[in-house]
Length: 401
Image (cartoon, rainbow, N blue to C red; front, side, top):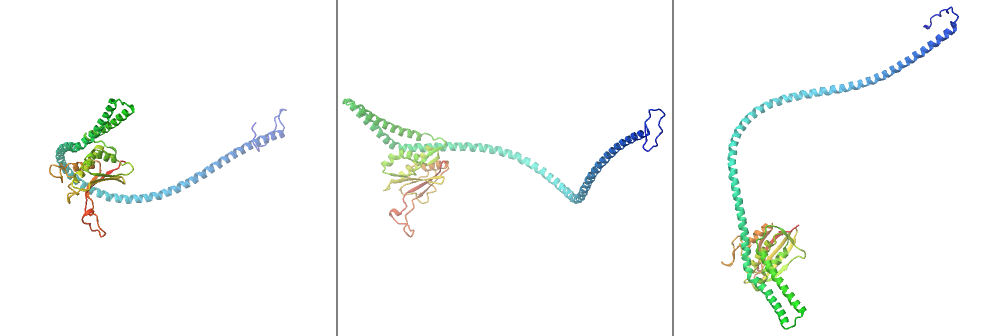
């Protein structure tokens, strides 16, 4: 049954089961109360939703305010951009005009370039012919250089063989001593056996002595064979003092026969350079030969060889007590075929070959005379030890680091 709140109560039905008026009113009030509660809940829900919409609207309004501020800033920035754009447009207009002028100038340049290209093409063809000729010339120069290198090697070998020829007499004498000693020791063994005094210890002693002399002669011959063969172009660490000693071993007999004294001043440590031992030995043999020939008439015959280390270089001096280098000839002394000796006594190749070998080893060589002694006032002392005496060859070679 539908009951409207506030409507007048209808009279009860005539049947005896109808509720009493008080019960009907209470039921109606309870029903209306429940409806009111439901309406209240609905209203509270609507109020809650309205509050949420209000808050959302507040956030939206805040965001819109921020967006408006940003749009205002962007509008100001756009105004500046438009002003800059107007300035750029004006500049571009001027640049366009200048570019148009440059385009016209470029057209003229391109026309000139085309004509230049035509001329360059002609020049290129001419250059091709020139390069072809240059290639042929370069190949010819390389062949000449190879031939010159081979001739130089032949010249060095010829100088070496000429030196060996000069050393033959001294080496023969040096070989004669061990051969005589070998004959003596073998003769002693034969005598002991023939006399029946074949003491094994004595025989072994004589035979060991003979073998020692055989080894000595073998070393001399081996050294001559090593020096005589063509030197390779390889470079390896070489003890320079040992090279000097090897050169002296070949020259010592000639120096002894001419009563020439040799003084050596070497450092205690090993002096190692990177080079070719045979070529460097030829250098010092040439210098010793030159000093030997220079002291033929000297009363006091002394060759002094000094070796010192300075920084990354080894300094070697070879000096003699001969008459020295004549004035004005210091620059010509290393020229090929130049010699101060009498005709027939020298080829003039020794010092030239020496100069070439030192240069190939990245070194230097120079010559000067011994300086004269001076008195307290710096004036040269005339006569005696005050005069210049002998030549000094100065050699510098890089150390092997």
